[in-house]
Amino acid sequence: MARIRLKGNGPQGLPGISVTGRRAATFCLLLVAALCVQATRVQVFEAKDLNHNSANQRLTIERYAQPRGNILVGAEAVTGSRATGGRYAYKRTYTDGPTYAAVTGFASQAYGNSQLEGTEDDLLAGTDGRLAGWSLWDAIARRQNPGGDVYTTIDQAAQQAAMRGLGRQKGAVAAIEPATGRILALASTPSYDPGDFAGSSGSDQTAWNRLQADTDQPMLNRALRQTYPPGSTFKVVTAAAALASGVVTDPNAPTGAPFPYVLPGTTTPLVNDSAVCDRPGLSLDAAMTASCNSVLGYLGVRTGLEAMTATAEGFGFNDPKLDLPVRPARSNFDTAMDQSQLALSSIGQFDTAATPLVMAMVAAGVANNGTVMRPQLVDKLTRSDGTVVQLMKPQVYKRAVTPAVAGQVRGLMTDVVENGTGGNARIAGAVVGGKTGTAQHGVDNSGTPYAWFISWAKPAGSDAVPPVAVAVVVADSDATDVTGGALAAPIARSVMRAVLGR
Image (cartoon, rainbow, N blue to C red):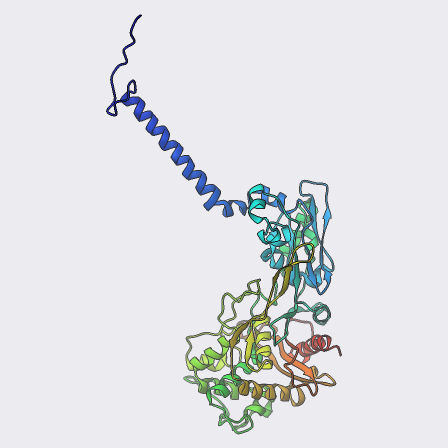
């Protein structure tokens, strides 16, 4: 029998494997290892980014493969779903879409989502792991659970009153329950119907393009995403800061404010809108009732930048992450100013800018004895069968001022309504506190002024925390009397009446 000789032994004593073969095997092993690392990176570390990549149609198909969960106001759904018979099996629908667009946002097969449709998308689409008891297995099997529901804090009557009050004007309303931070109304006009572009057809694209080209910006959420100079409504913050710092100890005593009050470092006097203000020595109460710029500008400078900034931030200014869970724009109070700029900022001008939401927080904090609650738009999240996934609880945001100071400011705001510029907000059988504001803007103040009103209300004789605080801004109107008292106060009154049931 012939013998077969194996050529050579490797260094490990393994017969028949050449150096070239060992190198090839090692290279293949490295390739396999690299593939494993790459697969792990893609499937584990980049999975979320790839899932939400706009080019990944699988996620969109999955999102609309079944009816979407609903967003509810009270016990009524303001959204729905309709079968399409197309690639995306279901399309989002809206009940009275323009009324609630600032709350729901939109869910579009072609253009994504916004507002609660965006922040609660996983729950509404059924992909949230909290919707099933076997979430790990569902994730492995990629099984989609029925969409959950989002219960909002919105009060239907208050929301409808806000939209009616704004009408065809450009503006916004935010209303809050002071003791809890629950948002009762969130309105922005002009509005839009999210159902007009919920699908992916040519007509949806046409509707989207029309809205994008509209110079009135109906898709801009003015209650949350637009800031305005708050004008004299900011005097509530200035009054609170002056009282908290001891610059003013008695709201009815003379403040020592001179007239005319010349802006520090300049020769420019700070002018008033009312002749009632044009005399020295006015009290804080008289200055708030008549909305005197000279007195509040003087008191802001006396209080100082540090104390003014601390009080403003206590009410929500300068917070870039005031999530509810939707994130609003940051309201601004400058932290570096000279004294003349501080005087202007103390009357809500210069670079001071606020969303209606934050100005509602100012009114709500005063109403709630100086404690500002974190604003909350969602009441609870549930599965499709109604079982609760998450129940939201009230949270303290900040303690802006003491209860004693808050009580003094409430007295000032009550006098504004009873004896001053806020008379249009009076409600029979209720105690109402408010502050008007007419904010100048544009080059040389040439723009149509912003008409503001912030307020709170409670039944007469009640010792409880007022159940509603409101901020209204009218940014553009055809009215001849463009003032907070004439335009914004009646809207606030209608929202407060809706909450009070009057």
